[in-house]
Image (cartoon, rainbow, N blue to C red; front, side, top):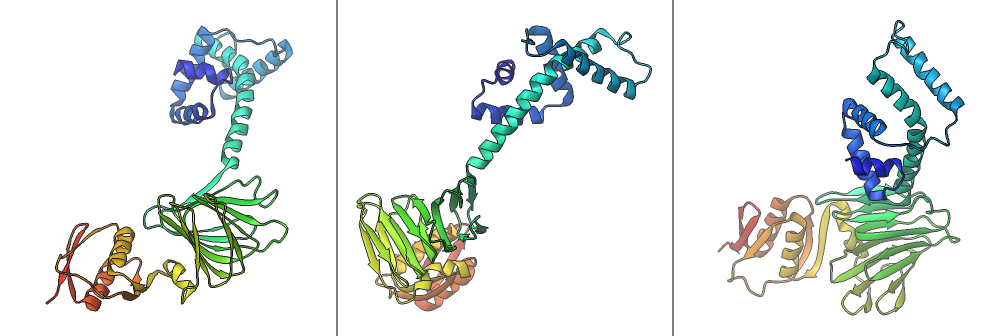
Length: 330
């Protein structure tokens, strides 16, 4: 406590120490703060060369006036020794703390303005409007980061991890750029869905309107994606594949509260359900070579999803906490 207090007053704290010190000070009772100031006054030598006698006199006068206002019968002469010490400590330390408070404010502003992060947890979604008017809907477990003091002034650049639906405001003089794991995206004004989780084996961009420049940072290969096209990045080798799905809006079905599948294997459907609902699904070994699945499943209703799967494939579902067992109904 004492060491970090000394470093604080000598302006030697790192940003991390400064944030930790702020939290500690905010949590301390007033009595403990007063004791800390008194101990500092009694134990340390302060350099007051930058503080003139006139400044000290003015500070002391203000302190006396406040004491007189609160307690008219109390004067400097009849204050106790402790009260005199604390008053003098306040007179000496006030300029010091004023300077440090200003520094602390500047540091706090710098810390908060350097980086703005919007993120979602499990089962959460969020809508954000960026300073240029671009709107982004974040799917669960996603994060968007940008610098407010630069965005839409010097550049329009964000870092992204997760899945999001982007409606980028058009500005031909300042392209909108996205950095994500293994890829870079540059657009002028478009609407698209980007699925780029840091730990995933692939990343996908599905373009609804406009055009997009999509770059693989691993290979340096880039493609121009056109409306109703989807570009798929293989994170392992950095290769890009451009396809034209039957319905490009299937990719953003999550935004409407549903999953849309088209000729998808049963195993892939089950994997999607496990990831979305955070459950473990066991499949009876007797279930083999099931047909491909085409249809929609709700994002937020596990029981309805199991009911649909059960009707399509003739299955029963046994639920035990987060563990689900699927078996043939006949």
